[in-house]
Amino acid sequence: MPFPPSLVHPPTGILQVPALPEEQIFEPIDRSSPSNSYPVHLSLVIPTYNEGQAIQSMISQLTRLLDHAIPGQYELIVVDDNSPDHTWELAQQMMSDYPQLRVMRRQEERGLSTAVVRGWQVARGEVLGVIDGDLQHPPEVLLKLLEAIQGADLAVASRHVEGGGVSDWGLVRRLLSRGAQVLGLLILPQVVGRVTDPMSGYFMVRRSAIANQPLSPLGYKILLEVLGRGEIRQLAEVGYVFQERQSGESKVTWKQYVDYLRHLFRLRLARFKGKGKPIVPLTRFIRFGLVGLSGVFVDMVFLYLLSDPATLGWGLTRSKIVASELAIVNNFLWNDRWTFGDISTQQKGWNKRLKRFLKFNLICLAGLVLNVLLLNLLFNVFGINRYVANLLAIAAVTLWNFWLNLKLSWRVTDVGEGVGSRE
Image (tube, rainbow, N blue to C red; front, side, top):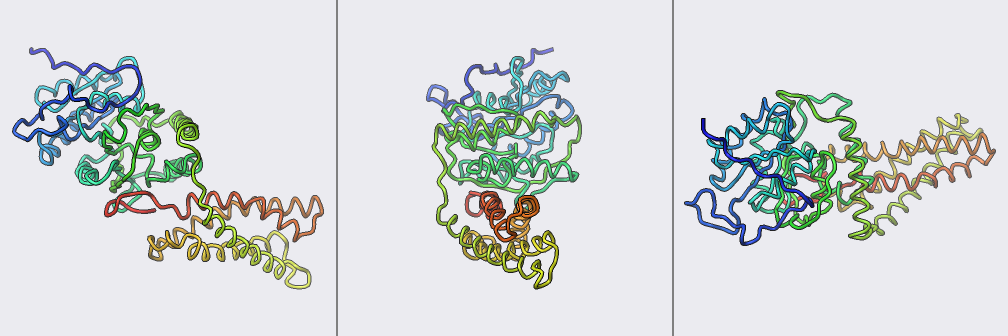
């Protein structure tokens, strides 16, 4: 029996992707192709742990697609965390028949994000990519990513643009995913807000955008690290439908959500130290404030008409809810037309306007809950005049409404023209 091809030795030390120096330049695998500044165009890393049931089919499908699209100009790098089911060994057995395949077995380190970086450290390509080894990322989307990366520094497969989605997620899983994204937008808006699907683990990035940048990933979300520490100027997004696992068990646990939050805060601190504070959109803030004042007027007028004993005499809580909702409608119309008019013109159509309104309403209604509690506390407990109490309650939730609406209701992702979507 012939000796199996050698495994790639895992790098150690700092997690940093090198710029490929001249002494490491090789001829292309397909020697009939003209030489260029890189030995291959695409280096695709497949991080694995107990993916023995899927890995060989995965390698076969990827090879068939890439042999047709960029023959001889790619490599597949399986990085396995010493799987008990010997995923690394199953992949190694294919190396003789697949010369573009390389396999790394890590026995000292663990974790998807660090596995990806270790794979990129030994990669030889101009473009670095990552795809899950369990077939939840459809391999055929690679061709769209290859096209998109031609005009961008980063191309992301997204579940939240046209053509994207999830195959069979329950309500709880959808809420957890979206909730994690909202937390990311609050903690790290300048990073998370650049793409529609910051939780994606399926993307390509140019080596030049992350080369020589010290990386410190945590958990599963390597895209956050690339966005947060890389020099990403142009972005593109393509839609894909996230598939259910065909075999094996999901590795997503509550620990992954904790790691996600820790990662966000780590990047937040790093940006404060290294790149300075974000610029405040002062003009938008002033416009938002003026619109808010008009909403205060609407709120106060209807609160009087509904609750005063000389008019309808409704209960204070019911009056406040109706008055606030009318103020919310007023504020949305003015903000959509004036405060964020430049963004709204890029999101034409009643369905998109309705989506913006629902986001705006949900955020403001959350503030309304706090507003109602404060109003009743000030009026019923402390005996403050109902109108003064209402003004104080409005002031208390203004910051909440401004911050969240700025980051969520009229958010535009920074994607390249002609590819992806704005949200």
